[in-house]
Image (tube, rainbow, N blue to C red; front, side):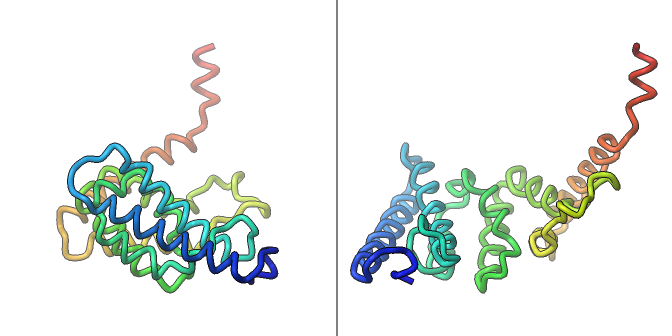
Length: 196
């Protein structure tokens, strides 16, 4: 791996030690009580370290050699839910990645959604509706990532399971999204000609 990245093995080990130290320092800052002015920056840095480690594992030269999801997600479980809000879209986009930590990521998203459903549920519903395309939009060049769609659906199911209020909220968001889709697919030409 070090040869692929064009770095000597000792430099790669040094970067890994630095990245892990940075990860633990930023999550310790996030776990500290109260509202800190550096919370959003720390959360974004944790996300950058984590996502960079994924790129590094896939052979990218620019990724940080942190290691794997199993190191980041347990730390995220200990961070207060409201401090994770800046990276909810990035977390949702990692669903269905096939990593062994998908269940852990779902647990983190469910925890945040229970406290802040208005931030998480719309993103999950939007991703779950990723295959809801008009016939002329579905092309050979664009096919939705079914693993991500299933990941979003599974997370919505996990959020709704045994929680009647969450189930009602998810159903309402799905109905709202369906209404918006129907509106988007409606033929506007008759309305445009009537206005003109």
